[in-house]
Amino acid sequence: MNRVSCGQFAALLLITDAFALFCLMGNVSIITACGFVTGVILQFLISIPTANFYKNGGTLKSSPKPFAWFYLIYIVLWGGLLFVMLWNASEEITIPAEKFSLIPEKFIITGLIAVTCLYASSPGEKALSRAALITAALGAVCIAVIVISAIPKSRVEYLADLSCSDGFFSELSRGFVLSGGLGSFIVLLGFTKGTPLKSAAGYFIGKAVLFAVVPATAAAAAGGIMEITDFPIITAAELSQPFSSQRIDSLFLIIFVILAVFAISVQTVTASYLLSTVIPSFKRFRSTAVLAAMTGSAFLMSGINQYSVIYSIAVVMAAAVVPLLMVLSKRAERRT
Image (cartoon, rainbow, N blue to C red; front, side, top):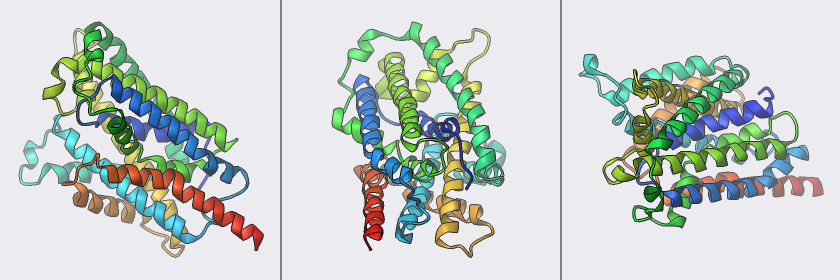
C-alpha cells in the first residue's frame, strides 16, 4: 500500500464519517452534538498509543496475523453496515426503480454501488486518495451551503428542547457507532506521510467540527418535525433550500451517492490490503471477494438495530483494545 499525505488521510476518513452522519436515524438535539464531540475527543485519546506504535516502527503487517484478521472482519462488517445505512436512507431519498419492479430495490442499489466501487478501488489507494481530496472538498461546500442556508430557518427554542434526546451517554454511544470507520483509520494511519500523531490530530479536529455543526444545524432547522422524520440530517438539508429557482434535493442526492461510493470504496481498499496480508496467495479478485463479503454481511445485519451498544463496543475494541495488544506484542518481541 502506498503512502498518503495527511490531507488525503483525513479526506478518506471524513468522507466515510460524513456519509454515516447523513444516514443518521432518530432524533437529534444539542445533546447529540455534545455527545458526538465528546466521543471524538475520547477517540483521539485512545488513538495515541496506535500513533506511537507506528512512530516507533511498528506495522500492522509485521504484527501477529490474528490482529490483521480482526481488522479484516471488522472492516467487512462495517462496510456491510454502510450498505444497510444506504438502503435505509434510500427510502427517504427517492432512488427511482420503477423500470426494475421485478428486482428488489436493495439489489439494484447494492449492484450499482458495488460495480462503481470496484471501478473506483481498482487503481488502488493512490488514485482513490487523490480523488478523495476533490470529493471531500465538494462535500464540505455542500455542507457549508446547507448550514448557511438553514440559519434563517433555524429556531433557538428547537436547540433548547431536550425532550427528544435519550440522554448524553446514549448519544455518546450512538456517536461511537457512527465512528465505525476507525478500523480503516488504524490501517491507513500506518501509511501516512509525516508524524502519525499529527495526522491523527488533524483528522479528529475535522471530525469534531463535522460532528458538532451538522447535528446542531439539523436540530435547529428540523426540531419542529423531529418526531415525524426518521432522517433528521437529510430532512434539514431538504428544508434549507438555498436556491430560489431550484431545489437542493438533486444536488444533495448527487453528493450523497458520491460519498456512499467513496465510503464503501475506502473499506474495500483497506480490507483488500488486509486480505493480501493474511492470505498472500490470494492475488486476484480480492476487491470482488471483499465486496461480496460486505454485501452478505449487510443482509445478515439488515434486521438488527444499527445503533446497538454492541457496535459501540466493537469500535472501542478496534480503536483501543486491539492496538494496545499490538503494542504489548511488539514489546514482548523486543524482550525475547
